[in-house]
Length: 163
Image (cartoon, rainbow, N blue to C red; front, side, top):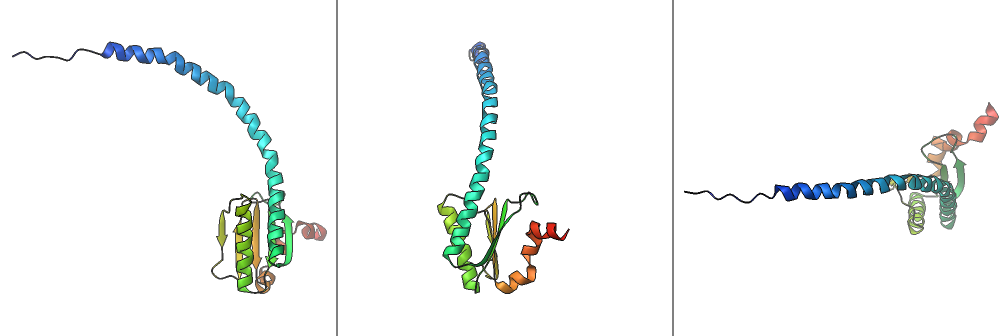
């Protein structure tokens, strides 16, 4: 009984990766050379973010004004916290009004291409928080707003005057 063995193809397999190795090294060198250009592009992209936050603040303020929000206050908290750039606090006349104010803010932001990270409190309608990353919007009933007094917490100018 004779056993047939398959012909060996290992010589070809070892030859091919060796031929590809210089090509891989050249591709890696190209990627490394291109890396500093990407870093420079990222640095330039940081400046428009501040302009986008200002545009988003104006958009949210306009959306609240469209729906007749009351006592709208805008706080620039860049020097106070790293969580967000701007906090907007507004009041609605009823729980339905609060819900519709928050829904209008979300709709206008999405239509303008901004991403909503989350909406909290929409079910109850007493206090709705809309997180737009660079801008956080608090829409609440007047009694809830008076109780929590977010204006005193975030108004940097009033703390500077008292100090």
